[in-house]
Image 1 (cartoon, rainbow, N blue to C red):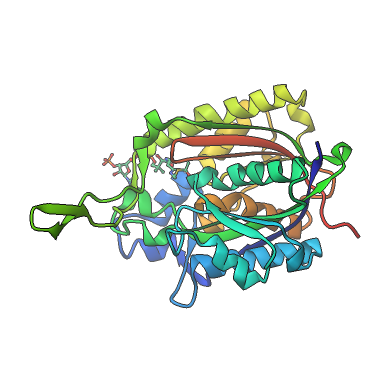
Image 2 (cartoon, rainbow, N blue to C red; image 1 turned 45 degrees about the vertical axis):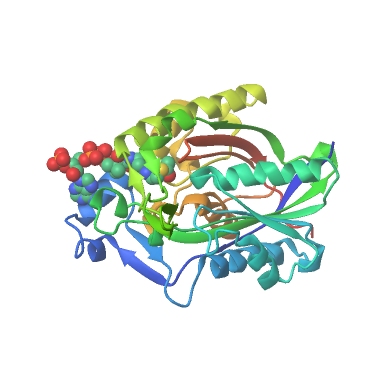
Amino acid sequence: MKGIRLCGSGAAVPRLRVSNDDLSARVETSDEWIRTRTGIAARRVADESESLTSLAAAAGQQALQNAGWDASSVDLILLATSSPDDLFGSAPKVQALIGAGSAVAFDLTAACSGFLFSLVTAAQYLRTGAMTRALVIGADQLSRWVDWDDRRSCVLFGDGAGAVAIEACPAENDGLLGFRLNSDGARGDCLTLAQTSERAELLPGMSHQRGGYAPIGMNGQEVYKFAVREVPAILKQLLADTNTEAASIDWLLLHQANQRILDAAAERLGIAADKVLSNLANYGNTSAATIPLMLHEAVSDGRIQSGQLIASSGFGAGLSWGAALLRWDGPTS
Ligand code: ACO
């Protein structure tokens, strides 16, 4: 079996920044409430000139550039998203925009766990030797599914995209040291973006369901409890699986949902606060985009260095959660 090298990262966020103060002009909330409960200060919202596809393509293109790859060398594009521009899939449009004509491209939906699930999925194609280079993109435009009059949820979410370029390498250089993935549909009702049940007449006496989704539904406290219980647990299991001491982790890279979740997970794992990556303040929860967006930021500003160990966990609707132990490599010079 081959190894996986993490070679390049990229990110793209919408221009429009909506601060907590801006939001308090629409719903009864305050900057103080939002910052204290979540760590979020602002989020980005796509404007008319931007789309899920354009953000994903921009992030993907930057990851290719940073990896030093030609688009034509990519074999696979996996787009993790729960908010495609087209329900038939947005990945092929991203493929065309990037000019990766040889790549097969498809969407993968696993809500906020989507990027992590996609990274692990793409890695399997590379491990077996079936493919050599993959671009894994996490992108979401949840602003179109948020109920902007529901203060309990609208303050949390934002739009964005991030991407990572990975390629097959000799097993001894493997940068995906271990992973675990979980789903529990029985607990999924606490976080939904579900079809509406509206029906329309098909023919006299016959009806069909009219397509359409209700805004995001969320029981915040249930989601919070789920995250602070499962994220440290899965990471502890992963560290045990891979014989890794928590002290040897350079960075904790979690799905950016809430600063209190990040802090609680780090504390339970015994990982120092200065190793916890967070950009919640600027972007809020961008769903499938949070992990690669954060990764790209920390690689770009030099925090994450080649050879460093990253413990990552994605978690969210489904319910779904997963963890991966990664070693960042970067482009070969
Ligand atoms: N501004 C002001 N007051 C608010 C707001 C707001 N934006 N939202 C809720 N409140 C009020 C509530 O109405 C309630 O008032 P009441 O007591 O008069 O009824 C009070 O604040 C407390 O509400 P709680 O829901 O108990 O607040 P809590 O401390 O649980 O914080 C929060 C809510 C921030 C949503 C928290 O539960 C949380 O972060 N949960 C995780 C949810 C999450 O991360 N979802 C993201 C998607 S899933 C994922 O990515 C994992």
